[in-house]
Image (cartoon, rainbow, N blue to C red; front, side, top):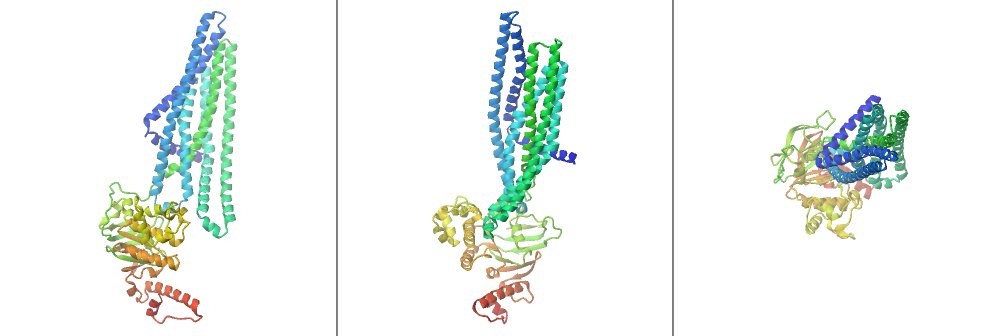
Length: 620
């Protein structure tokens, strides 16, 4: 198990570092400058102990020749000052360069992540918490700041310092150089092993629960209206408390392991201190080292000790930043699902003829085909009603037209153009859709309506609102078209949101229109207004209307009755309602009887049974 965790940690490092180095490659000149400045700063630190030792030797030799000693002391002093100034300036220029590097990388990574998330498939978004996704991106962005600092400003100079110290000490005393080199390598090896094999697995699990906590928070906050309506605040708090408890346990374990790791590193530094200072004392006792040499050794050790302690911290920071970036990197590596082909071109829709040609389709994870050799033609300007039980394939059909999924076989064309060869943005920009539950941005009403046509004038926005029967209620608001609608449009009623969505569709002026259960959950007054707006909107457009409430499709040019991905009946309402044992007739009878029972309950205790089909038609 330990091996498996170590391998997983190593793979995470490989993925994250590969991702980071890829972004470094976009600013090669700046990377070279930062590395050169960091190395120069480290070299200044390496040479400092040696000249400190020479200064002490010069002072100790002062009694034998004052002038000569003074000259040697001033020379050593001048070099020490020059090294200090050089190191400081190099670090400052390195910091200024890494600020620019990191900000550009963070901006690019955030933009790239958003670009990918926007283009992930409908299924991906359906299975993901928005809050969790945001947390992955923001946590990964800030982890990159720590990663860049650790690799370029901290870890690289530290390793140069350790190598330089080993060479300088070894040049004077081979045995002492071996102690410094072997001790440093052993310290780094143990630190890396503990971080990858011991701390990283716990940190990875802690981050997973951190992501879940972000998702749980966003889920409860975005659904606050439901929470309030059921008086479920305490229940949601208890639910979140369980997630927080798990997160707390996993995070505590990560921190405790990090503390243990730090303790092991501290113990190893004490052992190195004893070995180096003890060896220095023995060299002095045997007259193999002067006072200046001992000063050199002690200065070098204390500087080395600081660097080694920082190496431990840098490795821990590296491990933490890699863990924090893992989920962001996994987003970058994930397939978009539905992608534009390399040679995809914009699609030009003028007539709006839609054809399904021998289409096969199955949902991912399902063995059975929903559509099997399915063919259908929708004429330009034709108004089609899609009817059927839940799961019959109505919604899937309109999603396939928008290419939210790719077909398994056959093809779908619009005006003779295969939609799989078209750019998705181009295709969808020419299809207006009004959904059952329209989603609005937490922006002004004017911005929400104009979303269909960026740059639309206020006159165009108001005209679209009037056509959608939305202008009157918008004008009555204190801030009119500048009114903010709240997250997902929560400040508006269902009918108001629907009319704003219709105004957006009017402004889009697309040749193809899809109405997906657009009146299924509205009051009677709103339904009348929206039905009238829908009639205006359908004029001159190829229209597909998905409906359970059959009153919305009675006037369609053709009704398609679907069952398990097949068109089992088609025709106008008047013809389908007379089909013996027809599915449409059964659905219609149920709704008509439901309406009549409602009327009877409202006006009289008597039970009225329809005499024939015409009575049903009259009732509806």
